[in-house]
Length: 186
Image (tube, rainbow, N blue to C red; front, top):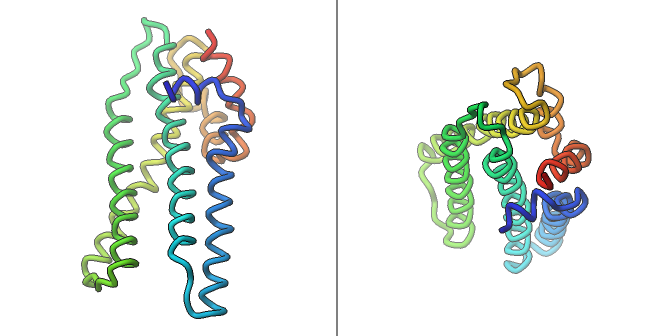
């Protein structure tokens, strides 16, 4: 399964799939903006390529968090109960918000539909939810990692380091992923 592959993958593979794709999408976005500035138009294929790379990056990061929080959770000792129900609810609500944002952007871009200002304001306010929820998703993943390592209940002070490493994902991934590889191999 893909979760097992992500848990056992080398750090550089996860990095390339997530931030390599993100950097590629930003590079293509700069080219699209340059074409727009120089010629007054840009290629739809270029815009679609930006979207595809962005989706690959977001899906990789999301699946990595899911793999750590849900599938690696199976390695938590039986006597320690950690519920992942809230994680799952917040995870899917965040994905729905992000998908809705992409759909709104696509509708606005390709159909040239004018969206009422009140709806745009409400929608952008709703986009604050994913930003806050990512903090909880990272919190839960860090808690699972430290719980497995220590084999006991943990408090935030026990896993604050892991929390901040995952929060700065491109850097922290190089430190966290080898530890996850060892846990997944057990």
